[in-house]
Amino acid sequence: MDDLRILIARLGWPIPAGRWWTMQELAKRLGAPATAAETEAALLRLLNSCKLEAEVVEALCIFWIAAAVDGYVANLDLLKRTPKPSLLSNLFLEALGFEAQALDVDLKVAPPDFEIPADFDGMQGLQLARNLRTNLSRLENRTSLPLVRQMAFEWTQNQTAYPESPMQGDFWHFAQSLGEGFVGPYSSRAALRGISAYLRNLGGCRTVGGGCRPASFAITRLKHCPFIQRWLR
Image (cartoon, rainbow, N blue to C red; front, side, top):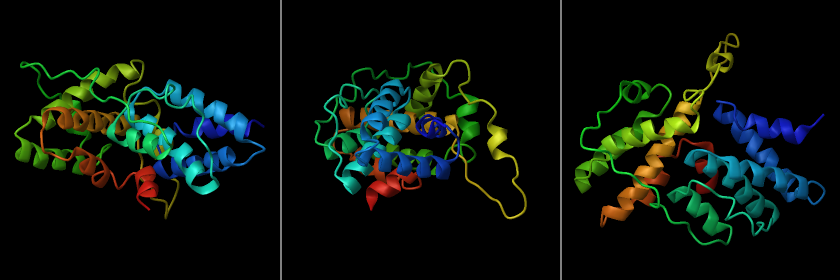
């Protein structure tokens, strides 16, 4: 059985704990001499195919764990295989020995007539942790920048990342009850899109916001994410 292919596929499951366990297993394979080459090649392909900033961060976390635990030395192709840069992906790249990437090369400001869509409001507290929007509102008060509106704009823009299924496929296949005593948190494609919009927004805030410190917001407000919890230890 192709264990590596199965592990890579599990990174797409909308279950944070499942993705986190998979990331750790892939990091072990990346750090083991017998499986390093095959795993590295597969992960570089995965990284290069990422369509959202949050996906890139999760993929880079695997390389970082392998480096931190097993002394893995990152392939020089890693940087050019890394799309969708963000504040958090730059932290991982720097920890792996690379220079940070530019963040605002394709940033677009929400047009004056943009209206926050209903699905952006509807996912708050359901598929996306509400604290991201709450803390953007606080940062907005400090900087006078329309950050919540810009995050909503980024949310509409990254819908094209998965035009066939922007909210993911059969989510309820994973969310259905497993029986008494089973309660699980879920992290759907909508959550990845929301986190990606948040990260892009903070990258733009660093460019135009003067003295604000978006990097600290990016880390402290995403502590619920398993890959951020691992990085903070």
